[in-house]
Picture 1: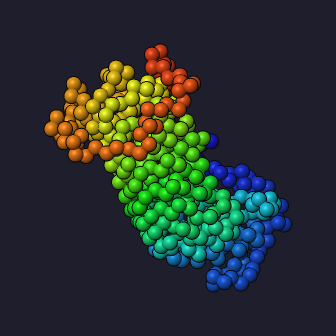
Picture 2 (picture 1 turned 90 degrees about the vertical axis):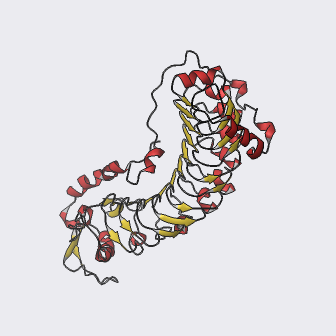
Picture 3 (picture 1 turned 120 degrees about the vertical axis):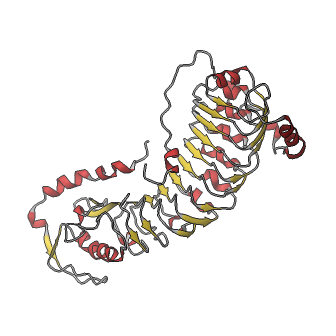
Length: 413
């Protein structure tokens, strides 16, 4: 299943517009009713009563907008809401003959508003809200009462405060993107109990430890990079063995050893923990990551030898181990170095170029080496019985560009 890309959302409800053109004119009638928002609907024509209900909500939100340099709200007038820029209509599941606002795409609109509360949480048929690269502030509205809601993207805005607890418990939420905001504090364990497929919370100011519930969500694409997360990677990560494809944990303050259970992630293609404080020898279970294409463990405190079995993985396109304290690489790994796949710079393998000084390596091994819990697991290869990694004669493969690295840019991807 592919992630819904932002630049294709405008086609999501395209078939609706064709059906609207074919409607009988008798179904379209003027609707006039008092509005609790002080916005009159008198003498306006709406294609459906559901549109008449949300019209004053949209107009009230429009009145709060402080910046609109691209004049995206210029055509938010009249009763033809389905043709408002950024609004998309569809037939709601509870009444396939009705017409309602089902999706909103404000990506790149550069709108400014003090809050989204009282807007998206008041649109009863809303399923998708994407608003990357705006200047929306305030809290994230409580969308838990929106019975069809499943995608929320408020990335690259100016939302602040603690993690938006209003998204916890949204039953069908599968896509959550709050990256590049000003959120801080801990990441609540409850978010990992949700049936998310995509979770992007990178480039905020989150702290505290990753919860033990870390492996309880069937997430496929996970980005927690560029925060201040601490503690170890929970062993429960192994529970994601059937779903997790890409995970970015780089540039945090994670400590401890890589859990043996990382080797259970048989769907994993990208694993990046660069620039943390992780340590220990590499578990040989990593050699079970048959689908891994990009493995980045750079700028940590890993030590001892690089498992030859890891270097024999046939799908590896990039293995980055620079900036650690490894002391030994075997012939299979050396072949990867020669082919430009394995980066071993700034380690302690002194017959290789660009290594740490002997003094620096000695000091680390005398003063800073830390032993790992469950040491008996580090030599176990759980897939050994059906071990089939063969470097020689492997077919050349073309690596598909990773999805999650695109989340490290502020804008939509």
